[in-house]
Image 1 (cartoon, rainbow, N blue to C red):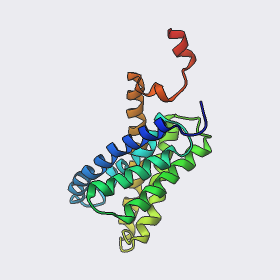
Image 2 (image 1 turned 180 degrees about the horizontal axis):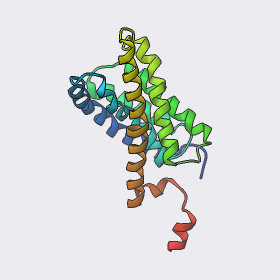
Image 3 (image 1 turned 60 degrees about the vertical axis):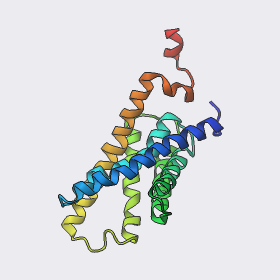
Image 4 (image 1 turned 30 degrees about the vertical axis):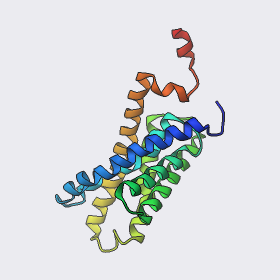
Length: 191
């Protein structure tokens, strides 16, 4: 497998990210609907906004894919919104970098559920300083902040990490993703 990105890999990553950009925009309806329940329960759904990077990496496990995917999804989200939104781009870059860090630690060789869940966890963690900078956390009571953090981290682990893994595993079973990974010994044995 070549180390650099091929044009086909970049295009597939961007196309998947465009799909996620649309999902991200539609997800605001779900997020805001749940938000009225209070107690930051909506944070349990926040992991959806971290999924593009993890899904794309699990399909094309190469350096730079997670960053490209999250940036493209963030840029696509601003296009779908109809306005340029700097915070969305900043979140996208930081989230993509957080995923890249985890995949780098595992040398871009692991596509395991634990690596996906760890990437989701770190991406959720990386978003907190941005939330604080934009004033989303400044005036939250301590007990409420703890709920916010716990729910966001759980969402990163299970929604972004586990759900992304299950989606790609289902795609793997269809054979669609084999175009981006070398054939395994089992593939040759099945011939």
